[in-house]
Image (cartoon, rainbow over all chains, first blue to last red; front, side, top):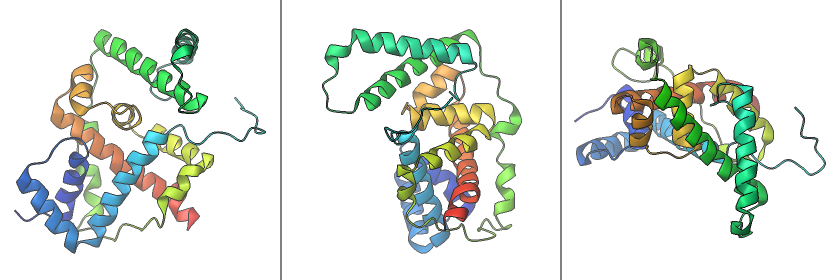
Length: 68
Length: 167
């Protein structure tokens, strides 16, 4: 199974939401070894997950006003 | 609060959170900061509210929100990237900056409504997709497509509004 970058983007995303089949995981891994663009996309999707899980962000400085 | 429909709902949920916090104060073990503990309760309350709301009203999902065609411009005809996605350096440095989360919030607000909602349920509240599909009465495939669209949209938005400026 040879994948295009477009297909790989979807699989990277789906892999964060469900367990991919062994076949899909293998094809994905093979593609990522060779493709810097998709490796970046993969890192960025995983970063989005870390960022979202920390939302709403760091604590304010004690001196900072809470605003509206 | 992005995932609630109005100010009154947001105020109610904050009030419920504070009530729950007062009642549960003895359960606060001091392992996390008070803020983390309160945000944790708040997330649960919002999930409850979304559950109640989605039972009342089926999700209205326009075709445009589940289409994948908008991303075609990123790719060549044979499915490669037309231009290399930018590197973000050390993106985790952004996680200690309040300003970054303001931009993230604005990027979320720029997404179509259901796309943003599904992303919030999955990544901010940590629900499983099975649960999201059930609560919103959408198919698993639509759920994955919405999450993919959210991630692609957010990465493009953050790249433009944060990482391009940060570099």
